[in-house]
Length: 455
Image 1: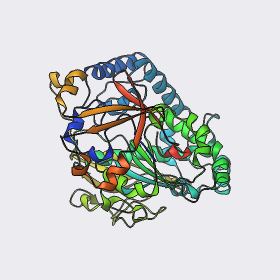
Image 2: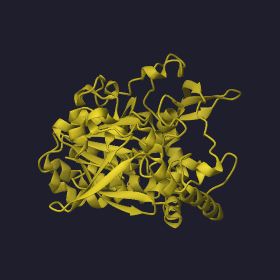
Image 3: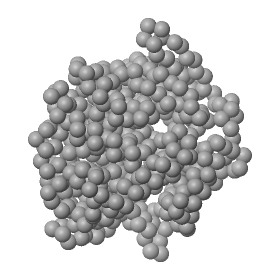
Image 4: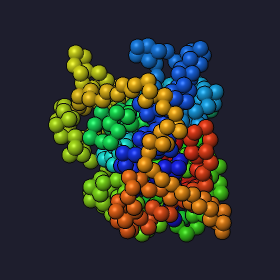
């Protein structure tokens, strides 16, 4: 069983050049690919944030445009709603010293979190978005109880807390900081991807729930609910999609209470794959060389290990001090003084002593493309006319759902992908509703609590 997300085209067509002109498909709604309404919302959002003292134009700006756009997409381009979420996040970050947490977290505490939660494979999907893997069976009740207890009873950073956020969960958010401050900026600078003019602000996740029993799901309920809701609230639109693999037969039982943790946009980004759909569907989104062998690919990756460097980095990344891969720990990018390069710096602490170490440097290759006024303000109606996409929607009366079938570039399923992939991707069924120029979707199958991989 599979489920589509946000009205996008089936997986096999994500590389189509026509995706740039269809308002429901990436990279539309992202920096450099905004229609007139979205451009107007971004400018109004800046004005409102500035009036509230929540944003400064700079240079440099206190928050870049791609970050502001995450909040607007999450709130369907309603500026007032985006303002509420942004303000809540800024207050939460200040109350819990999230910047200090990330810079001073004990490396041992960071590694403990990294090994339990979604882990970067070191690879990307076909659009250059970082690929994460998460095996839920590692989160048994005993492990979680020990994790939360240690977090509550130990000082793992120099950050203060607001007394409201469960202290046992705060270490988890160092991983989200790593995603937004290290991984996404890194992937943005790698220009061997379609839409290299668009900054990377999302992640793709394979979530393996095989071997997880109903009792384990139930025991994880409180922890996963708290983590998911905080992530959805404070790290919006950092998820491109989640592939759920190995769903047990009872999975529909847990869907009723999991569904309430997420907004419809997040829910709509979840694919639940049957065993025969795993390999063809993943290959439609991810090059086989970047898919772990366990899921039918070629990458010799095991959950728990650090990311495996991509040969595509050769000649781009200049390693320092004997490093040849990224280590565990809080990483971020800084300008190299006097050079048009960025340096990856590992921070954190060991036994209370803060560390600072340069891991590598790379060229500052990413440049935002300048768009003409006509392109930037092109209305949806014009964009829709420009695309060669044709779509038909049929009502499935027996199921009470809508199935959207799309064909791009004038090609058919048989000419663009294998029969196996076509069979899997034809099952991406959604209930869609057009709102403010954005398509939201309600998944027709049962997503999992493990959407904490990203929000």
